[in-house]
Image (cartoon, rainbow over all chains, first blue to last red; front, side, top):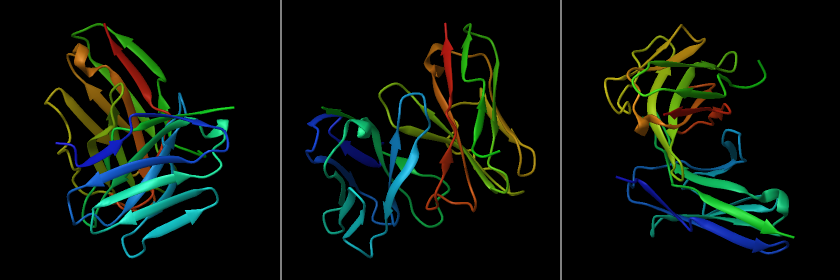
Length: 112
Length: 115
């Protein structure tokens, strides 16, 4: 049972465009929502994370939008660059849990 | 070390053989996690170690899988009698404090291929 559903599976964006990746969850106990970025041959690395007390968090070109009532959150990459080409995973967890629950990943390709 | 280190980077084994994967966490990190990443899929939790507490083994897919950790140091994941469906990238992560809602630092993974 997939606790976090992620879409799209793959995404192609022109350089300078906006990349948007969406995730949805069911468990209302989740209170931590990180996004991980993974380059080929590397392990995932934390990109940005949000907790449900805010609806948006921005770090540079990366923004998480969080909709608690809809149980959805999304990653927006502004001014996408070829160096952003990677696989992005959303995840969720909660106090008392020992692990993260990951989405299935989105392979982003930014073309020059 | 500076980051989480895993070895080997790649492992090809014959079906039925046992394999042992190693993880060296970041020094001082009390928590250690193993995840499995199958091709085109998300990360699947396997096992969690926190200090000297009993490990959370709830994610291990079968009794062919086991893991050990010595104190707050190295961990080994052992897969006995490997099957083709065990082929995946096995990722280790560590965090300063335990729990799913803290930042986890991942190693580069061990790509296991069972032929």
